[in-house]
Length: 95
Image 1 (tube, rainbow, N blue to C red):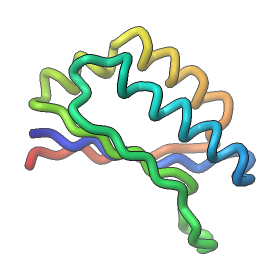
Image 2 (image 1 turned 90 degrees about the vertical axis):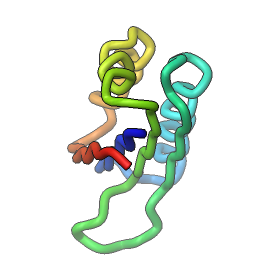
Image 3 (image 1 turned 30 degrees about the vertical axis):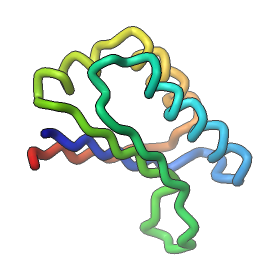
Image 4 (image 1 turned 90 degrees about the horizontal axis):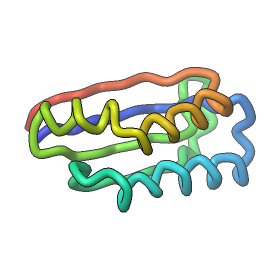
């Protein structure tokens, strides 16, 4: 299995904006067949180093992660995220 984790720092991290991003990310679940599991968490810590949203996804293998990366609906979500996110960080690992 492969875990893909992404943290997002939003341009505007008001709660309603975080909820909109969460809904958009969760919509991947029914659109991308290779996606095994998805979780989206909204950060409540007020630390300077904190990011606003965590996306945690699971795939059977790296090949499925590669398929996800270029899936048309995923790319649509990525384009949306680029309009609302200041930055992001990613970690991918096998487990």
